[in-house]
Length: 119
Image (cartoon, rainbow, N blue to C red; front, top):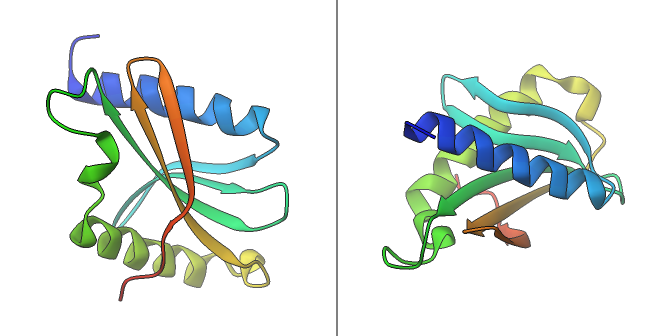
């Protein structure tokens, strides 16, 4: 893999395949709006609308990948998700959840309810 975008795409695909195996239905990938980008939007097996941030690290030399999902990043994802919900009314009856998937090498760690809406 040559650039960060290509690496990101590869690892997002890993995360999507992981979620599908757990019974999630993928709605969108790399959903971009004026507030930011959401890596993965899915519906969980218990019918929650899930906004998932994916972070990858080759090793732990630079820290755990999920440490990069700080308050500023959570705020950006929260605002982007609010905009998405406003323009996709078909999901208005779903409860919303914010998850994070951290990948180190080939190991995937999925944290459900990683954070709550940050306004």
